[in-house]
Length: 102
Image (cartoon, rainbow, N blue to C red; front, side):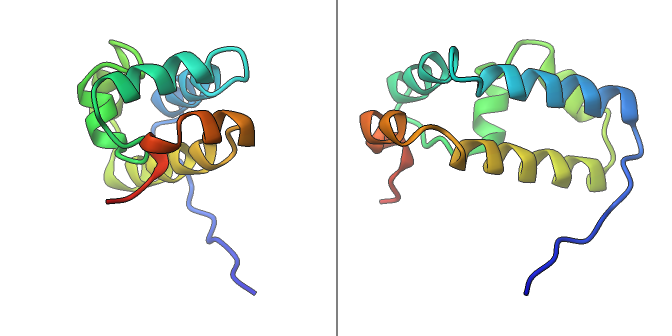
């Protein structure tokens, strides 16, 4: 059975700020708005770096992300992808285009 390694977070403050922003973005009340913005831009929802650069995750999030070391950045990307996959099935069906690969 696969077990994810525990990697300690180096920059706790910035990491916590980013975690909170991502959790708010993917909360049931705001996930549809985020997915709609991704769809309008013709992007794929799993492209974290592009969503970050476009400001879809918040204007100050990119600056906080840049302060993180590589290990913390990897954990943020993993957290983002987990949240993307945890979106309610009815929203995923509604925004199927942003979830598909092609």
